Image (cartoon, helix red, strand yellow):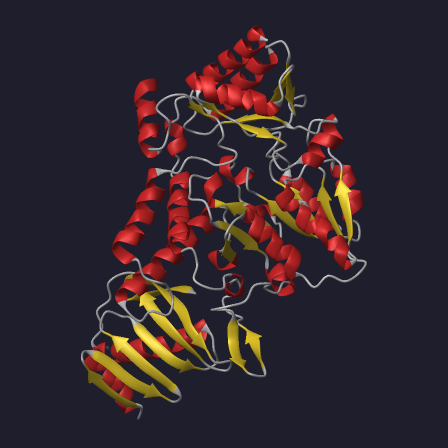
Length: 107
Length: 403
């Protein structure tokens, strides 16, 4: 699945690949097509405010959002495990949630 | 740019163009364009990783390159990329449809008398499953009979026909034929192997349920093809080959099929990654308009070829007695020689490369011309020159003189 996102006046296209499927849930990888630089500290703070478990290790944000495990790199790549329902659009919603935390901090 | 500079420009794009003789077998395989060769080499030299489930940048880049290629190939025929699946060839793609639909005894399918075996045998084979397979007639010169197609589309679940005849070069009115079949409720599959190579086709606007084609007919590598699939056909089909990437879930009790993207179940196992990337580069090349650099248009060359052959005594040209549109393919016979003999003589003495035989369309030859041995086929493309055509005409004329 491909999608476009405009942030800070810049349009970036993303590819969402299904890695593994378990029926009701699935693992996905989100790949930005051009360079993205994320402030992981801002996202971490926002995620924690929502009372999710999260931390940063080796420059990777690791979080647990309900049943979904998140690994987010500052270059925008992300692995989202056990996304429910098992669909690219559900994975994209999780990803948008994370980006929204950075946007909220920036605002 | 003068003619010599234009020729050199084209030649640089096709490094395998023969230095001597003439390559006139593009309907079997177009020469591979340099961008496709470079893209495949780049994949093996710099990425060389499997796609999809590698959680490392190299694999991610391979996945992105594959999806970019899908986008390029889909753009070439103006269809959404999420409705384009890759198959090893046009043949495999058509078989995936024929074997993927749950046919009921008494269902009807129609194909045509001019089809390549790839779009003929998979349908005839359905008779073993109780399907009524009708064969649509063509005009004496190889254009599908639209009235017969309308009759045989009545009550049909699927109608399959070619975009252009590989044997005769006749280009079919796929828009009208598609409308005719769809108005009667049939799904439509088009074999685009020959047509896509020469025609800029907006498949989305034509509106078939499937359009299958191959990389090696449009400057890409062999071993890779693609097929556009409509939503309703995707809903009606099940994969006949299963493996990695097919399942939504599995257990000892059974499995569910993956549902997203809808085409994924038709691409089980590790794909032909380099082939797909090369196909994508060839599609971009095809879309780049590089044909404008051709010293003479293939249409003009085709006309020169046909007129030249028709002017040689003892030469019979097939499929050109009508005013319909054509791709640059000329099939002919030379009296006193079998097609294979002509091919051997052209190859040995003159290094002219043509294809001979029935071109996987024995039904066409028997039905339209009462022939079993087929013909000699010369086919052109962007890199073909007037010199190539002259060489063939002179060599054929010489055959007649020497007989």
